Image (cartoon, rainbow, N blue to C red):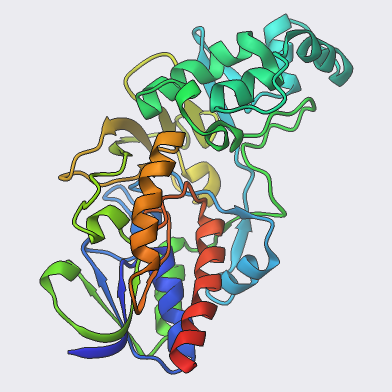
Length: 368
């Protein structure tokens, strides 16, 4: 079996690359070790008829017209307002930190000016934060950091925020207004019929793409002119420099005989329970049904027998990854793209944007 481009992985990165390369006449074979397409963004209807995200909530947001317009070729959209609560000190708090959070803290209605004064008096002056702990205390001080961030990071990453890159905690906005959306972006929406329908439409528009699921690329030799790899970069190089640090996750699903079980799409548990958050994606999908499913996420130590879900970003891991990046850059006729292949904590829209950019480079190589 031969093809123009062999693509390892049928998540966002692999499928976008396959569709784009097919559009210029390149025959692509996509190998996916799981039994389904879509990677971690895969969704499905469970036995109770609820549309669920088996691998945790995937909430689409982007500021990129290019990314949004590209995906709009394969899906219609429904608007989504992603809200989160954080269970701290025995009650639910508005989160990300905003004016409503501050009002809960002081116990009475307040103003943006009063909250800003509170923050000014509690911020730790750090001009150039070197880690996630410094990034947060330089914005909100120790009290709010201890409530919402310290325990969350210990549970999520099994290490202190002071060991993590600033970007890890800075993913979540901090506001002094009543805006309580978890995410920012020009486009906040969900695929109207789900991610899997969108992925299937993408493939239906790509007649030169063949997807083989339940197949490991290591056990399925195929001739190709170019390789697109979206898996773990350290695995590709047989762990020549050791295993990069990842976190794995375990997901427990609970179906309830009620319309909604929790007040928001996501509830964080930074300081209590073994799970880090619970997701009730029905708040975002707009599905109308009499029951609902909650997915609880349990962070776990990574091993080679488990799925890697998140790269652990730190100064140490950046130096470690740099060795693999040098190998990847020196590998002929191969392109590494996606969260695991480039060891980046990408959101979905960033993955898509990076894949569209990578396509242009591969196209130049194949047509040059």
